[in-house]
Each structure stands twice: as structure tokens, then as C-alpha cells.
Image 1: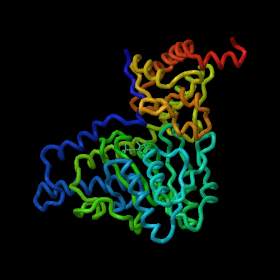
Image 2: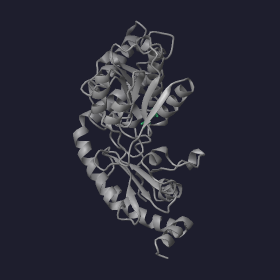
Image 3: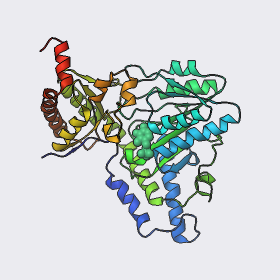
Image 4: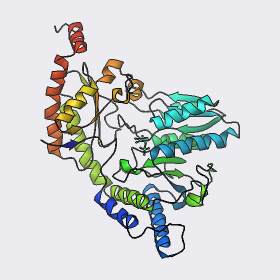
Length: 394
Ligand SMILES: *Cc1c(COP(=O)(O)O)cnc(C)c1O
């Protein structure tokens, strides 16, 4: 049976190049990057080279990149840090969107409990924030605008450059959670007026447990971890040089192959979308064009997403759904609700996130598996029976 990994928005396979770049620091070059002797200095060079490579891929200066443990940490640091900084100036208003990752949403919720006012901008049916709405929401006491670069469930790409321009014009700091975008779309933090940006290596074929925060020079972001002088004294702790080296290698590899990967993925993605939309009572979630090249998110009426995933798993296909039953909650995804899907439709959603090593044969295999699973699930579904009755089909 074919095995198809189509959950690259959850995590990706480590690239061979990244693994090779990591090995020296897991073996011979085990020195502490702060030590003065040779293997310490070799580790130190590893840290500097990794930082420079990450910066260069994003149009940042080397000393504007701070390594973190991943995307969640970078999001927490950026948002809580700017909030602390701005509260001193009496600014206690944050603008975000309704469909951010929980690393952002739960963080702003925490700040709300501490007296911040939060504006959640609508994302409309296409899953795209309007820069105009950002502009209209900015007040005298706005401390931060935090809008994700690309959504992790429906893959929609936000008008980041326009939002950046609005924020710059109004003198408000702009953070973007770019965890789904870095390594997948072309980014230039300077040209796009981004002040702070979160990223995570395991979303672009780097190792897990490493990410970074880009923080524009001049922003006096409070320290995250007190201790040694690592990360310019802002995040102390002996550097995981192997992880940094792996992240840098993966990002460089992704950036170098961006044009060809985008072309390949877009074709696979469109083939998969068109193939699945042949199924009765299905819909594509999120804008079709302003969309990550590897993201497919489709709802099937009268189907329960979790069951669909289990059947797909039996067919060797790893995917994800828009319902959160596995995490112990019966609520459907806040992202799908934010684009206006009714609860029962949101529950029947399927996310397939591709990467450049997926093949056309794999796409066609998925397209061949899904219809019979949907038919089977619908034949057992009281919800589908109800829908059919309402439509006069039964
Ligand atoms: C995966 C993800 C995160 C969390 O990143 P980790 O490195 O897993 O902590 C944050 N935001 C988005 C949009 C993501 O997709």
C-alpha cells in the first residue's frame, strides 16, 4: 500500500542537507560556544554562520535574529515583550485576527486578563484580513499589530506588505507569525516593513525544537531568559548549535529552491483541489489564489473529519482535520468558524498539506481514496440523511 505523508503543515521531514549540517555539532564539535579554546570557537562560528544564513534568507541583519526553541516561544516573546514595553507608555491595545495560531491567541488572551484591550479583526469568507481594517482599528494607544503571514489550517496568505505599510505610517509595531510562510514564500522583512517575525525550523524541513524571532534593530524587547550573554543577553542558555546549523541549512535549501518548489507544489495542489471538488457537497476553504502552494483544505458535508482521517490512515495517508476532537474538545476549528463555516460543516473538513517530495502518483492515489471513504461515511451518517431529506433527495 502506498504511504503518503500529507501533513506538512503539522511538521516536515528533516532534510538530508540539514541532517548533514547538524552532525558535526552532535559529534566532534561539542564545545560550548562561549569557550575560548578551539572546539568552543568552532561552535561559536557555527552559531554565527547559522544566524547569518537565516538573516540573509529573510533580508534581515545578522544581529536582528534571535534563536528560540520554536514558533510558540517566538510568538510569546514578541507579543508579551512588546506589550510590556508599550504598557510603560500607556499603550494597552493589541490588534490581531480571529484566526491566529493558538500561540498568538492564547497569549493575547492572557494579556487581556492583565488589562489589555484586544481587537480581533475579521478574516471574511476568503480567509484574508484587510489592511484597511487594520488601519481603521489603530488607536492612539495601540501597542502592537500581530497578524499571521499564512494561516496554518487554510493556507491563506495575508497582505503582509500592505499591513506593514499601514503600521509604519501609523507608527505602530507590527509582528507577524510567519511559521507557515518562512521557507515557503519569498519574504523580505525590510521591504515588507515587518518589525518582528516568528519562525520555526520544523515547518521547513529543519529539526524540531528550534526557531527564531526576527526583531528589528532599535526595538528594546525585554529579555526572555536571564543568565548568560547568549542571544545578545536577551535569551540566555548554552546554544544548541546543531539545531541552529540544521535550521540554517534547511532554510537556505528551501530559499534556493523556492521558485521551482512553488511551481511544482502549486500544480500538485491544484490537481488535488480539482480532484476532490468533484465530490458532491464539497467546498474549498480559504482563497484559492492567495494560498500557500502546498495547502488544500476541503469540507465535505455530512462527514465527520476525525472518521475521515482514520479511514485515510488505513489507506496509508497522513492528513489532518478541522475538528479538534482528538485534543479532547468537541469544538470545531476556530479558523473554519472564523471564515463563516457552520459547525457541522467545519467538523467535516480535511487538510492535506503537501511538500515538494510529494508526487503526482501520490496525489492521484489520494484522489482515488477519498470518494469511497466519503460515500461510506455518508451512508452511516444521520446528518447526511437529514441534509438529503431537506434537499428533497430522499
Ligand atoms: C506550528 C506553528 C506554530 C508553533 O510552532 P512550534 O515551533 O511548533 O512551537 C506557530 N504558529 C503557526 C502558524 C504554526 O503553524
